[in-house]
Length: 108
Image (tube, rainbow, N blue to C red; front, side):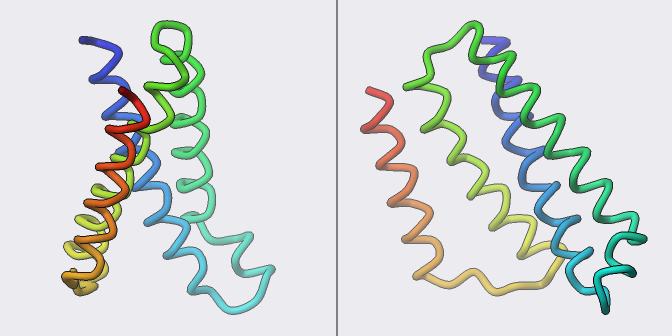
């Protein structure tokens, strides 16, 4: 049970990392991007997510962990809607639903 909670947290870290990297991408020029704190926060969160992924793989099968990382897509859609004010279309919801259905089938 604890491993699945860590896995959920890992996927959330990945989604939040993407949000920070999206913010870093808005800077003009490569030098300014390297000076943008969002780049380092996003990279740090990705590092935490990767370390948690390795840790979880000690206890759960790879064939279970990898498909369940698709939960990141749900977090990403929610965060992009709430923070970036992006629209959630039927097409996006259908795409995420199909990814999740596929993940469930693969992990069975």
